[in-house]
Amino acid sequence: MTELTQLIEAALFASSRPLTLEELSILDGEATLPEVRAALDGLREHYDFDGHGVQVVEVGGGWQILTRANLAETLERARVVQRSPRLTPAMLETLAVIAYRQPVGRAEIEDIRGVQASGVLRSLQERDLIEVVGRSEGLGRPLLYGTTPLFLELLGMVDIAGLPRAEEFTISLRSPEPEKADEDDAAAYVEADA
Image (cartoon, rainbow, N blue to C red; front, side, top):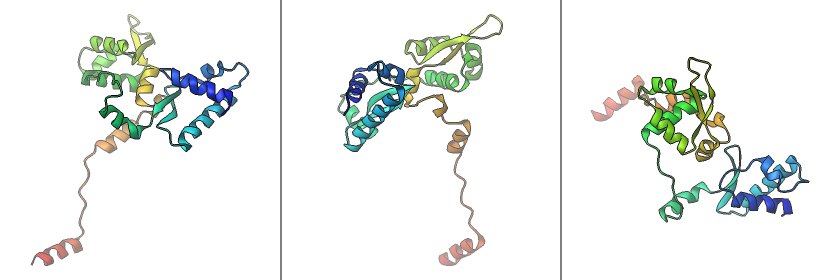
């Protein structure tokens, strides 16, 4: 393992958030971005090949060392991991609207949800899941909201393009159609009962 790989491993281990390639390249002033990428790939392969309980994952616009998914449930059961407080249904609805419509203003969020959203927006901002990304050109120049890198990190996504498309929701939510039996099947069923 090279010194650059060791530096990257130590930085990822010590960091509570994903680190970008640029941040990792600062560790060794002589390292180029392709060399940092190669060291990351080598570290990832090392963890995968040797069957470690952690893995190097690209998430939230950077890289992070995370527990393997197949071990997470056991760690939670043993209460080794501190879980962040759950989001309320109102928070989840608002977060979904922002994720899919960003940048989006409070009035549009309230129009879609049908309820007042200022308290929920404040809570999501306090949890660093959303942030103000600009102002609308409309009357009063209202604030526009978007998701944060922490949102991507919590969902395990590299970028917002990883969100499921609306078409995927309609397919997964549709009730299964009953299979149509042809006439031969129906006749065989009646004869077997007789």
